[in-house]
View 1 (cartoon, rainbow, N blue to C red):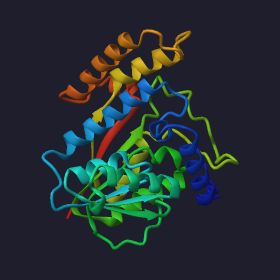
View 2 (view 1 turned 90 degrees about the vertical axis):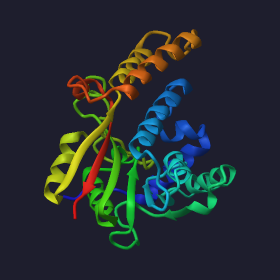
View 3 (view 1 turned 180 degrees about the vertical axis):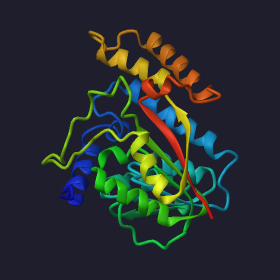
Length: 273
């Protein structure tokens, strides 16, 4: 039977979550110390900028599950005209305000919609991004979202996704959720294998561009050691996180150990002619 999933409940959950915490925790790890969310956010942003170098001037981009606009604003700053999709009206409102502050509002268009069915034309976008959304969708909805993004991508276009790692020793006991909670929340492990199965059928080329094994190890240790929630030695913690991120961001290739250590991957899908 198809998995039941309520877009309305999900929209309500994410709008309420934004009102209950800071914008970064609202879209990353809700109850994590701010320093961890800041570090993970930096890994995503720097990995994306590296993948999109030298820029996106004259390009059309679509950010699916844009949330508060962390990724949308980067795309706009790099020169793209960006369509930003999210279920949450509150998230989109926050994004519009940030776009005005950063003087990229003219490059931003917001669309309040589910990710798996968008009223947009085929082959419309040079770049499609989807960061932090797939793990919050049941498998059936997630699959439709990937196929919808594929439909909207131009020939030779690029889709950049963040996928959590179902093989990670740090995440193996995480996200046991089987169905959407009454408050609208859902989260699960996705994994590269699941994504690759879909891509083979659609003849999409898959490439892992970045992984975060060093950050994931430090994150796990800090979150699980006694007293870690207080993080008394902020300077020491910041230095450890800085070094772990430096190693992940400067890695020339994806190590074999990343398959088991990384918590997340940045993946590129390419649409052939």
